[in-house]
Image 1 (cartoon, rainbow, N blue to C red):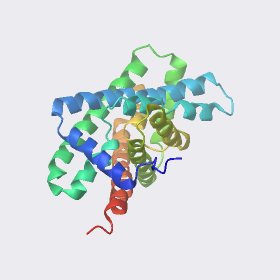
Image 2: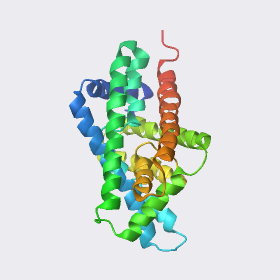
Image 3: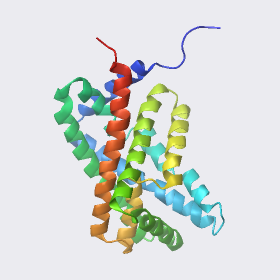
Image 4: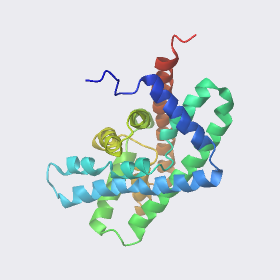
Length: 257
């Protein structure tokens, strides 16, 4: 049997993340915006899939579990399709910034462009789902109800919920670098984002589609939405940057001369 190590080391994953990050920072603003728009709209299918599955299950006790099981669909399509997702970018460019501060400006540009495009895509999807008539009304009602429930709760609780979701999404970005097989990447994405759907953690793109569906449907006010969103964006940033990017930087760089 070969003694060759199969799993990449943390150092190898870190260098792979840096290569991908450098590639993304070099992309034109228009390309980032279109990619971010695609990601924001596509992630709407996570909430729609969960609402559809739960609606079809009726009042069964397994309805929420069934919804959580299909929730990762939008994440798989977005991440495997290499679309720009804000929470993934709390990891990738930070690996460059932590090594070389000159990447801070381009990283800020990337964050602003991608986040705005993600939110625009989420709004477009929510409007299409609620107002177009393409989605059956009972599923629309369930989707808006999911959004209303997600938007409930205090600002601090939403902040910490966002921290956990940001942590999970940055973990997705880190761990898929350890696999060059699509099936392995899909399994990792599915397992980690299932937790977001099952525990109803707040994510500034995927759950934004659900909350915006409630805004479009009239059950959540715009002012409440922006208060909720501010807590979630901050939480996602803290979870992705402080917990994953910085700690992984520590495990790779600690002890180096």
